Length: 181
Image: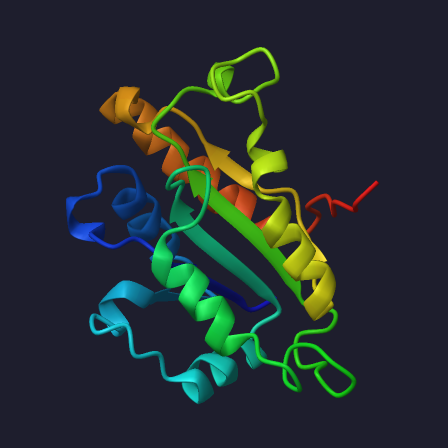
């Protein structure tokens, strides 16, 4: 299986957690890592190049830090431009049908905050529903997201273990597919 990891972090160099996850996944065979903010510092997305990249892979991973319970702005812009009508969806838009979509998100807050009883009142999976709906529209299998909680509190040892866990998760051929109920 060929895996594409699209990293959407506006300052990856300054990021301790996302940088470490990216470094670890880049070392793996059959994995292409695409640092989107670095590729498009002016935010002018080469739609054709992005679509070709997606077409060449079986599993697509969107890796990003949670921003106000959502994605970084370039990811939304990328979605709007790249996942176009007639290519990704619509009567002839089938280029991603059958591929897998995996969301890999990191949060500054701990897991306890992401529950109906927690500070934020919603789980990460609930907050990621727009991406799940997008997956349904473009015909991809929406895999159970990978969530790294509380990145600000992780020790160096915990971060190293998290990076290894991330790679194992991303490369697991038997990840659970989530469906809307």
